[in-house]
Image (cartoon, rainbow, N blue to C red; front, side, top):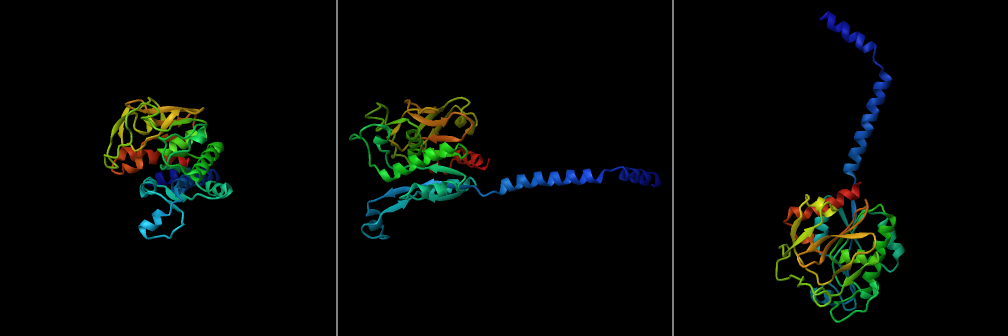
Length: 287
């Protein structure tokens, strides 16, 4: 016992307490930094629908004639929250400087589905196959996409119309109707429930989408669109296709998380596979 005590005493006399304290402080800082990043609130700006028709308020008895409305399906906010993000709805504003103030305060942006994108935004004339157009929303969301991509340090995720907006903002073009203009199959599959897969989608090997889905080569998705990306904008590449060749997924080349899908993963709430898209988005926003 005495021999052990003497060895311990010699060891303690030889220790560099200043170095030990420095290592301890360094360790605490590293752990603290990781904890801070893990606990950091991740705010996600989410675009919404904008409707000048006062029918929404009149039919629901929540409004008066002449009122304009902004609204969003709950599936978007629920999916972001489930993935660990804090959803914040971005209203349509009269001044983009106001929108920029909001964008500078969020960690990432989700562009949602909705009305058709104005063909004039990609140099075309609207034909009879084009659906309703909301110029105010188009102008703001295309500006949002350009602003976020111009910064280069915030993730941007587009769903359905949102993917189309990203492409138009970057210089791409759309089919106004995949059947009439593109000769593809029917893609507005509202005969199915919201969360029900309607057709397969092929993923490009080693793409960001394939990695998110565990390197699978094919997944099944729902489908509620009649417009689609005609050609990829410069700096983007198609990484997912339907069985008839419609582009179903787009990614920006490089390291930045700029991703779009044509289907509605937020509606497939009971599919853990689809929730991985939101989880990957939130992880990118935390980096």
